[in-house]
Image (cartoon, rainbow, N blue to C red; front, side):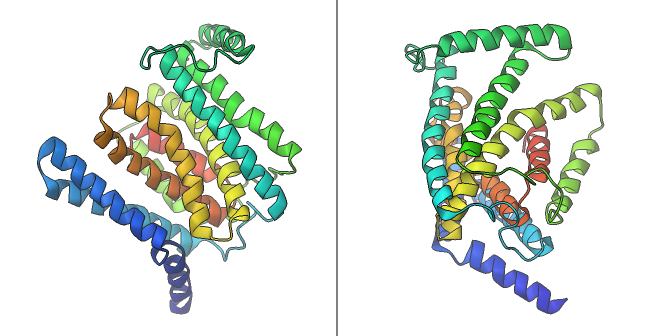
Length: 313
């Protein structure tokens, strides 16, 4: 048992503590938390404490994943990808991520949060497609009852742009998604799944809470995990020769996708608050990517992502 723990601890140190990337990330995150807290509450100690606690909790979670996961050959997440296929996929995923980023900007413009004409209205047929999807969303909301038109719209557009279209594109590129939703080799994830479930049910269960969880599974959990972990990180993991760099690159794309909404809508143009909370998104994305790296399956991370959203973590 002790040799096993030593072996796993060494792996964890080499992956997430020794690389300079992560030491810089830890310092930057704690600095952001401290600075943001000083700006808005004049208590640097509270910010420092918040930053340190978050780092300790996330790294403890990743250590548990590492400790409980079987010896890694990158799981089944990347074994079938050749370096050439992964590099092509990485280029395509960067281009497609830029398109998804424009969708976020376009959504903010349509809500008059950002000024200017719809940035994607210049693409022939795009406005017609969105109007068609809005009509389907309204009809689905009327049929379902518990579903609002806005929720239906997010599910439909999310699944279309984050799952269905990427699935078609990357299957044509030679990617296989067999086993991406299995429970094999996922033992490292289940303690976290159980912990999140306990936190979820601790405050009681009702119909609205269960519906919120079901909704969160479809959007954003399934959509974001499928694209950002199942495609972007997976491509980075094979295309890059440096595993820590692959983790950070895959996570950075996930984080950047959240920035416009955080900066313009949630924090109304406050850069310090937006960056501070973007740090939380980055750490969460790193946890999800590391978990996917160790298990090779998306299923438990979709559940954790959905539960985390329901708990506002």
